[in-house]
Length: 605
DNA sequence: CTAGGGTTAG
Image 1 (cartoon, rainbow, N blue to C red):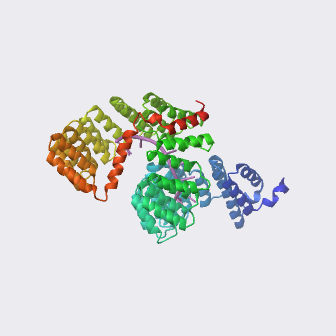
Image 2 (image 1 turned 90 degrees about the vertical axis):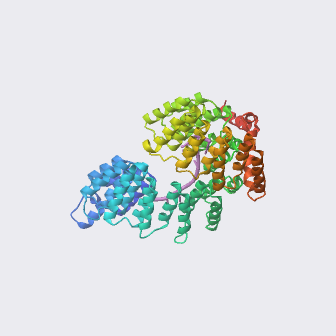
Image 3 (image 1 turned 135 degrees about the vertical axis):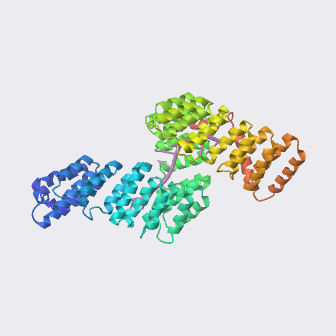
């Protein structure tokens, strides 16, 4: 045995082997090496010679790192505790094992600072490891992030590239793009990772224009890599920037990475989100080895562009041809169910979910709740919700929306209380459902109360959609002057959406006085919107003011000759389409039948 | 320390 291992008993060789075990996750070989080392005092015990101190440290550190990388925190900690001597690398190796838990990483950092307060104890590896651990806790770890930032400043490491990059990333993870940006501006040097972290972070923070501006700025300073292009594509898909997406498509071709799998799916994502399904499919067809991500992108594209039946078709083909499908694909296809979806197909997909063991996936369950709700099956939707192991805020939003959709106003408010009691944080969508329910019940007073409570009690800034709900509510109640005042006194008085809502109500109640006022506002805000003219002419005709109506119609015709006609035709076409594809025509669709047939072969029902 | 897809309302 000893002979067999003896060629390995060189400390550099040993630590190299251990590091390879760590990278490969080969715990068995790592533990075997540990056993051998433990028997060899040369590299294991502290000897009086200075040279051996280095050997001992390197060997022990390699052991700690190996256990950390294999995910054996306890073993790493045990080896660490037994160490006769430690340096900052020992601590960093141990920290690596705690990287999945922010509180553990911080506790270790505190311990490290207490035990080794001498300068140089903390290096950039320490700080980046702790920061990436903090990033796992999202918004909750802002304080931790800021504390590490303070430490970095006092160590003089905050402006360096590695720590600066980790701080930028950490602040984005905490939901503080402003702080990330401040670190970015103070950094002395920046590399491609710095820039990519900014482009990606801004895109994830939904600050798409800033993300794309940074991307353009970076191209003058450093070369972009694959990750940078992917991050910029994220910004394009988020902001529906088709033109930018096409430009970046050109850049990735020029960079020779247009055949990269991730880049291809990123491009497809941009195209399909922007409604350019032909372009998305072109990328899809040119891809040599499309996987389930590609399938998901295309399914989502079909679903979001009103081609739900094509989504079902593609999905069913995938299932029957045995192409690998994961939970994401299933969530995506469930999202293709429209207002009046074929219940039987939904049921089959649910069977597939059970068969594939996706029932524990929160996304899938949320989609199922929705699907059943949109099929008109409230009971099924409740059943999925009740059976969920882990509910998030969106799960609650889905079930609340289900009840709201089925007109159970009081249940909506009861569920809202349960949601809070369950510890789920309400989101802006929760309040949209609540306001929707108020509107249904006809309680404008309650609606106003809820709107006020959003910022006061829950710290959620109401968006223009919430205001639109309230305008709608007041409008339905016929309180048109109140609605007008509500818009004017609020933060969204320049939003066309609100004046449109008011104008719709005026048209319903035949109130030309407030209606004309709203129309004037709308014509200033969005002069090319034909819907305004249509509504105004409706108001005039309902009052019998034919001359005024004729004037509006004439104006409309003049506009019709302008080059913006295309837009209104598309809008008109959409209207006509959604009318034709109503509840009655859906079940006859051949595509849905085919999808069900294909699925039934697989799910057996 | 940067890196492809999924769920909510309208």
